[in-house]
Image (tube, rainbow, N blue to C red; front, side, top):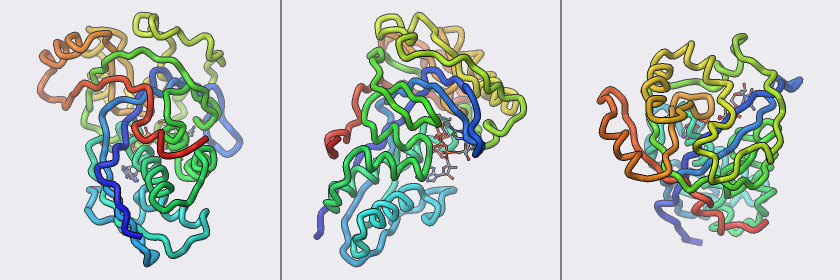
Length: 289
Ligand SMILES: C[C@](O)(CO)[C@H](O)COP(=O)(O)OP(=O)(O)OC[C@H]1O[C@@H](n2ccc(N)nc2=O)[C@H](O)[C@@H]1O
Ligand SMILES: Nc1ncnc2c1ncn2[C@@H]1O[C@H](COP(=O)(O)OP(=O)(O)OP(=O)(O)O)[C@@H](O)[C@H]1O
């Protein structure tokens, strides 16, 4: 077997809103969130090996290969398939900031599951891959689900969601936010009222409605003033909020030129960019239901 797939995309996500509605006995939090795919991506290269070795072929700053979710996903898939002879060379080209709330590591892992399941011909269904993904991280099932979603549970109960075909301006405030610090804070409110998926506005009203909020934002902005500053600045142009557990901050716009205008005015101390909403994961076709 000498198959390969190069420059495979691992897109980012934004949490359009994120409510914490409770806490499970194991400490994990019950959430409700709208997950939106955007066209800003990491990319990964895969080359199949037949000697049972799974290797990362490049360095990723701050992520030793042993702890990389990509390597852990490949090993877990091989183990679940019971095929110890399967191997791969994988390179991970990072474009998404770590600890940014954009789900970069989770998306890299999901792309690994999708591509290796295809190249190795391990024949796992999408729902089986989602079960495996959840063992490595709460955001991974969403990227395997393949489309925008209303999420419940710890993020693993997913329903398809219609979202606006809009543009986003995203600010990287330049701080790394460890997710566990935000969730373990005693300042975090954990009692948001449970909403129904039908309460989420339809695609035409989403941008103006400003539905919901990100409950993690209050804690993150107290720990990291840089995030508070970015939210304050971007709020001049619309309904700006943080994604996931931070640090990135975003605002939606109906037209691309509105996003361009905001980027022109952006203070130079922040890295910032625009991205377009995507309706489908670019690799969704690689697996069946
Ligand atoms: C905040 C979100 O980004 C929203 O998309 C995700 O729920 C976080 O997902 P993730 O980064 O994949 O998180 P994981 O690696 O599974 O968990 C990191 C840590 O966050 C906390 N955690 C995470 C998810 C969740 N529903 N409740 C939690 O309390 C746990 O302390 C966990 O140890
Ligand atoms: N391939 C990977 N890319 C990035 N981070 C990885 C990867 N593998 C493991 N990690 C670890 O995961 C941590 C979080 O990275 P990630 O980019 O997923 O953050 P995030 O965008 O805040 O995620 P989330 O939105 O899921 O909270 C990093 O600090 C890193 O140690």
